[in-house]
Image (tube, rainbow, N blue to C red; front, top):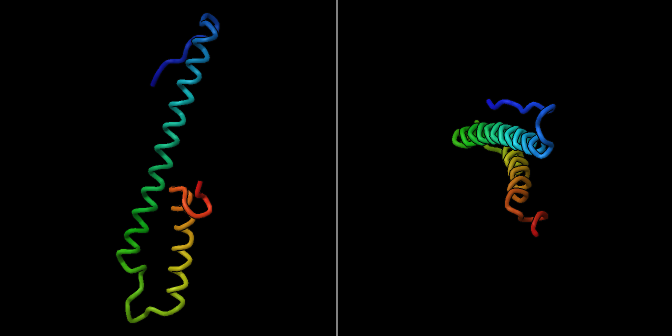
Length: 90
């Protein structure tokens, strides 16, 4: 943790620099937190996929195919956005 500067006896440019530094630190902490959320979701999805989405081969039906199609559609929207593909192509 860093100490904050005293606004009474500190020049303005130092105050702005201190505010910018604190803003960058807050943004980095928020970024790391969101990345951890995404990593946890991806791990859960991978585990569910490894378990064949909880569906035994003898129980596979069109409803499960539809459910997986829906999941794939949502994931495609995410990957298109992340990689600049599909409607997000530049």
